[in-house]
Length: 143
Image (tube, rainbow, N blue to C red; front, top):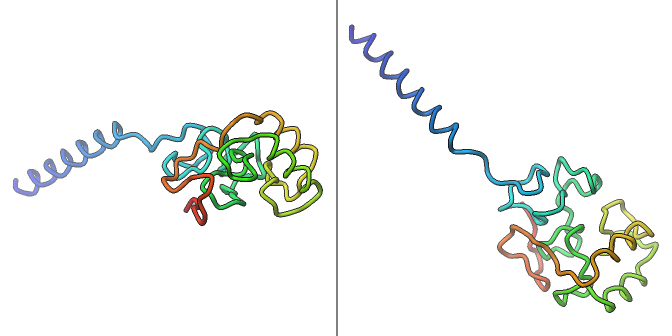
């Protein structure tokens, strides 16, 4: 009898736990890139394990280490906005590798990066879910 009560009690606790777990939900991931928003350095453009638009940016690449992933950071001079001054800085890096101008994370700065950059003129970096993210931040990386 006591054994049956213990089994029923454990079953009830397990059922209640599973029910609450079903309503708890997963952490929000606005861009569905496999990285929860709180840890995502680019919350509106996929740059995580399931990235499709920028498949080479599937590891939260942030060459500037300012908390904004490469696809969300066309502000090359880190003044808070993407403008003509950033275009001038970008043109100097054409053909280079390993620079903050490699927005699609393919390893080189090319015409594809320029085409994307032009769509971002007038914008600002981000958004990022990292609390430390700022245009002038250093060593603010997704973990």
